Length: 415
Image (cartoon, rainbow, N blue to C red; front, side):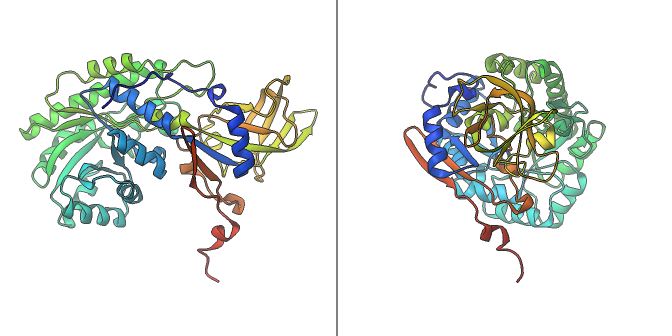
């Protein structure tokens, strides 16, 4: 890998080229996702440099856009997939199926069928499972290839209870059942690793708990080696590294984080594996949305925009904070406003009583840090077509995903 060029550890809204964003809004209309693919490469290079001896995979679920996957594959990343569609998209982007890792969580039959069929031709594929039932279903399909056991350390971390997977019974084999599971799995499959993921959006304040959980995962990997008498290829500590969504939050010192994680894992003969997702793509994308309504009331000044929870559902789903800036007129006085979309629900709000340079009808607002789980969770609520996504790569610009039409919204319906 070539030496990384210096890049800031987090990209704020003010770091984007405002004039270029306004031109994109005029050319491609709004709401519009804008992805800076060079920023994706920079974020990957930073984490790969901090973990030079680790196997760094990108967690595709954060953003499965072809531009993202291709850029990361070209940069040397492998891909971790959590569903059949993600496996297919990684392969379509150029991934060697032998390098893919599939993490099955309550997998539908079609997903297991696909993964087993793929592994028949590409035996390097690794399937991770967190339930004995899933291993039994794999065996019933004649699969005896590479597997990893997903463990549950009983410790969850992250920005919201809905992403604290390390203490959620849905994810992984309970710690007290790992040794017994390993002995059974080792007799039926090629057991190559232990996997754990404890939460998402981890920042400095979460690091102690996060590393404590990773230490538990590593201890369970050593327990598996003792129970089976075999050496594992890897211990995979998942992803979870966060980015500062709030302007006052400091970014992670990734070199310090790397030291802490290596210390938490301790001595292990196999490879340390990581699956960053959010860290790689969150600040590489924003949303442009146009103001269509300004309403003054005694309770609030309401700013209506053409983006909605169908465009970006994270504020409604996770009470997530996303920075918002008026890029048409940032010099105006900042007044407290509530910004919301056209959906008929009180959940369709991006911020409440937040100071924004006075928005007027026709202005373009930018909603930052939309790269992780932004477009991935976009939907067609209220029969709204999903927005376009524009990919910026240096001076070049191209459409990554075209804007849906009303015909696209209804095309699967029986007539």
